[in-house]
Length: 103
Image (cartoon, rainbow, N blue to C red; front, side, top):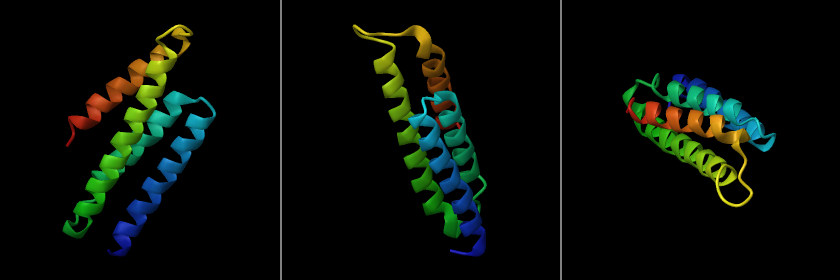
């Protein structure tokens, strides 16, 4: 892993940390945006030595997005449902589909 990889990992880890903090504060769209930013950063990891790392990060990011989506799904359905989070659920779903199309 070269310095190039370190720089990418630093950006991605910062986005992951920010996403978690936004999620904990119920700022779901911002949490999704941070994950999207992290995912896009993995696409710039072009060196062959970075390919495996980039793939692992993408898997982790996609899993995190799907977890946010599942939480929002729970909040927008069932007995205590609230439509307040429906736009965030739709946004998360759109981003997941968009990112899956990039790989």
